[in-house]
Image (cartoon, rainbow, N blue to C red):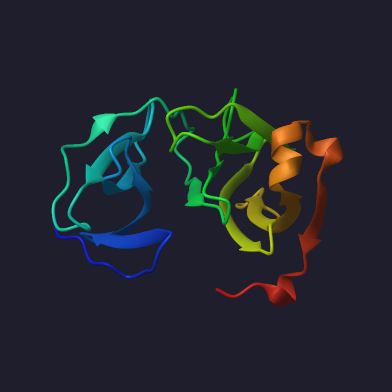
Amino acid sequence: YRFYYEGTAPSYTFTVGNRTVSATNGTDENGNSYLWMLLRQLEGNMKESFSYDGGATWTNAQVSNIAHPNSAIYVGKTSSGKLLMINHKDFNGRNNLPAFLSEDGGKTWPYTLLLDARLGVSYPDVIEDNGTFYVVYDYDRFNTGRMFMAKITEADILNGGDSDDVTSMVLPKTLLVN
């Protein structure tokens, strides 16, 4: 496979064969920069691979400690330098979609805020603006095909909680682009 760089820090997008994958930059305990890529699998935890040369070469993918229900996730560096991940937790299918926060480059994810507990939530993406995260994700994609947006902050995630504490809204279909 060949990786093609298409983005700018703090997140990168690469084309692998005919698939697009994302990588997040980080710094190890010795101050060395790296890229961290998470790869979906049909079953089990995600795999992870690292590049220490800007994406020219990658380590062999190994199983990570990040579980997922074969759905895309979001991982990106926040303006404060923490990592934000939107991924399912304690799931039975594609339910329980929280925001996670890591202060150690993704080794642990001690802070969580449940965004949506319903079955059928998936494919999150995030935009940060002045410390506010706008999280978009779909719900019931094969039937009603609804898109939701949750508006949260880093403080919300650090304080924890559940979907009753999250401001969310249904996005009108006129805003959606194919």
